[in-house]
Length: 121
Image (cartoon, rainbow, N blue to C red):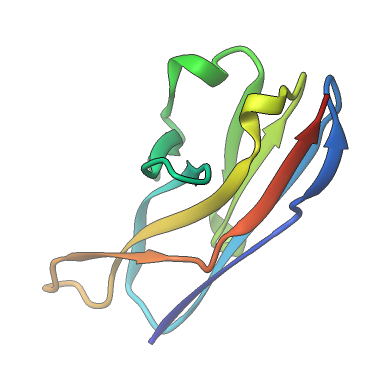
């Protein structure tokens, strides 16, 4: 059983910053990529950023230069530092982790429950 829990969402004014955290816990062999997605009301869930186990990062164009993804492999945790926030960043942010439960198992993607980020103008 793998559990993924996000934290750090909240209400912030435009131009402000927030830092999201996401921790994976449970029994597993390894964690490969970790990532953040977001979903605004009435819209699909979109990629925000991903990071591989070797810390190679990828960002959506809309957040490049403003958001930074990082991870602490010892803590099985991924972070999303969000700076220069805009009202259009308002969404529920979801974390995912790609986990192998054993050496011979395929990779499964686990999702957190989401955390609300609201940016006021």
